[in-house]
Length: 173
Image 1 (cartoon, rainbow, N blue to C red):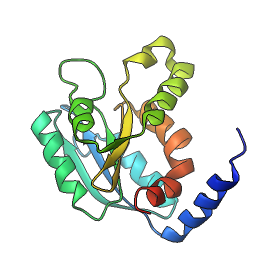
Image 2 (tube, rainbow, N blue to C red):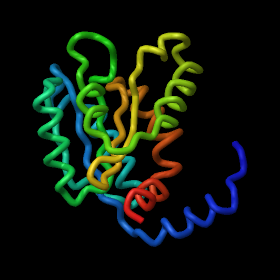
Image 3 (cartoon, rainbow, N blue to C red):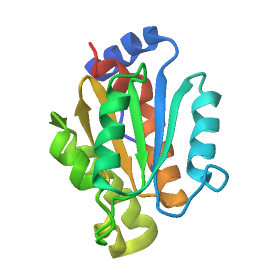
Image 4 (cartoon, rainbow, N blue to C red):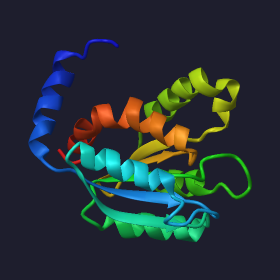
């Protein structure tokens, strides 16, 4: 892994002063229930393990109006980071990316690029089917990953958790 620059290290140090980071988990699925939503269960445990807090959880259908309404609702909540999973593919029912991408005020193209690069190492060329993305909406960091447990864990372990405090700090500094 490359060594971070001096400015990145400085930002990470400042970010540690944030204390507990509040996150929301949003699962977009037409088939899961709260009991079968392994992604939210796994993410909650990982977030709490780091000493942070899940302040909102939503399980919604992949309907454009539900995605937009949930984004607007949680953008007014105390969560600083909104973790979405599901609805990022290219099937007709996958609309999460389309709705979120129209609403994001700033995008983080690198998140999707890095996710697909890391995913390629695991699933090969099928990684191109993912429309994982991230950006900022109303001073909230919005991260959207595919709904497969492997994808959620890959994104969390390799991209989100290592930079969680830094991401949370950057979006409001």
